[in-house]
Length: 594
Image (tube, rainbow, N blue to C red; front, side):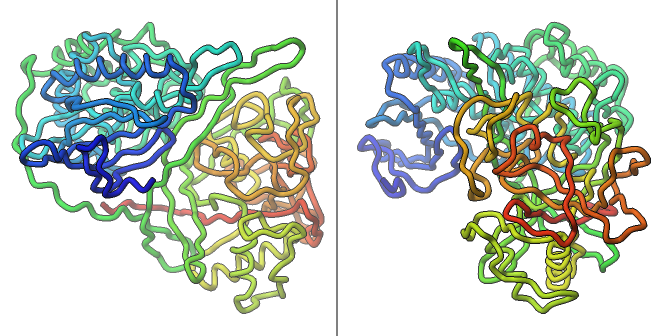
C-alpha cells in the first residue's frame, strides 16, 4: 500500500518517506495518541521469510533497543509490532543534522576538533558496548548533532536493519544474506560476518581520519609494502593522536582497542579533556551548498554538481559443497559513490561516476587460473582521477546522440540486434564509438572519449586483486555470461544482452564490468605489456588502423574471458552483437566547492 497518509497501528500517521534501501524503508510520522502529536521515526523492515525464529529475533532486538534508549543520546524505542509480514520499529525523532554536514570531502578538520568529536562519540559508544551491543555501521550519516543542545546522537544500529535480510537455508537455519556495514568503514572480520565490539572502533577510527584528511575512507591509498593506509603525511597531527588512530584501524582486530572504554582512555591520555562530555553550543546549521567539482580538460573549465547515489555491491564470501556441487555464500552490502548527471534530451540522462586516482597492479599474477600470457607482465600503473559511465552505453543513449549532427561519420540510430532501450547498444565499431564521443562532446562542451585499457581495468577491479571484482569466481546470479568454465558450475545463461544494471555493482558503483557486452578501449592492441605506459594513458602504435583493445567479455563468453585482467582485440571498423562501450572524462585537476 501507499504508506504516505496512512494511520499505522491506529496511531502513527505517516507524513513522508525519509529513506529507502536494501533493508527496508524509513518514514517520518506523527503520534496521534499523544496530545502534541510529536514527530517520530517509523522503520519498516521486510524479512524474506516468516519463520517463527524471525519474530523471536525481532523481539530480542526490541529489548536491546529499549535498553539502549535509556541513554539520552540514543533514540528511545516507542513501539514495535508486525503487520502482515512486515516488521515495524517506532523511535524518537531527532531534530538536527548528521555529521556528513561536518565531515565533508576536501574539508580538513583541526586535530582538536576531531579529538573532541571522537571523545563525544566514544562516551555514547561506551554505554552501547557495556551492554554488549555492536553498532555495526558507524559512519557520519549515522551520527547526528542534535539541534537543541548540539550533543551527539547515535542512530541506525545495523543489527535492526539485518532483520530485513534474514533468509532460511536448506537446513532451516536462520542466516542473513547481507553483511551490514559500509565499504571503507567496515573491517575485515565484520565483512566476513563476524563483527566484534572492536569492529565499531575500526569504523570510528576511519571516520576520524576522514575528518582529518577530507578524504573518504575507500579512497585512501595503501602502502604497497605494508598494506597500511597512507594518511598521516597529508595532515598535521600529533604523533600521540596518530598512534591512537592507527591502533583503532589495525586490520587485525586483536591489535585494536577491544572496546569503546579502552579507546576513550587512550584518547583522554593524549589531551586535556575530562572524562565526561562537554556540551557544544547549538548553532543553526547553514543550508549546505551543493558539492561541486571542477573539470579542467583542454576545454574551458566547467563546474559540475556532484550527486551521491546508493548502490548494492556483492562479493563471494565462501564456497560450500553439497555432494559434488559447490554453492557460494554472497555478501551484499549497501554503498555510496559520487556522480554527475549529463542531460541528453527529454529527461534521458547519462550518469558519470567519479573514480579516484591511485596506483594499482595491472595484469594477472602468474598463478591466476586460466590466465593468458597477453596479461603479462603484471605491472604497477598510476591512474589519475576520472569519470566513467555507470553502465555500458544503452540503446536509448546511443539513439539520442546518434541523431545529433555528424562530426566525422554517420551513425546508425538503431544498430543493436537485440532491441531494448535499456539494453546495451551493440553492433558498433570502435570508429562508431569514437564518433559518439565526438558528438556528445560537441553537445556538452566536455571532452568525452573511450577509456584507456589501464583505466578500464582499474575501474573494473575497484581496488580488488581477485580474478573478478566479485571474488575468486563468477556465478550466474552476478553477471551475464556463458557459465561453462573452471570458474562456474551453475546453469543460468541468458544467451543475449540483458538490461544494464541487472546485476550488482562493483565497489566503485559500476555495473556490468563482467560480461553482457565487450567494451572498446582507446588503445591499439599489443601482444603483452612490454613497454606499456605506467601513467594510465592510452597506448598507441604507429599503425593507426591496427586493431583496438576490447575488455570485459560478453554474454556469449565463458567466465575465463570475463576476468578483470583478460584482454582481447577486434578490428577498429568491426561490428558484432557482442561489442559495446562506455565513455570517460579525464580530470587534470579538481576542486570540491562546498
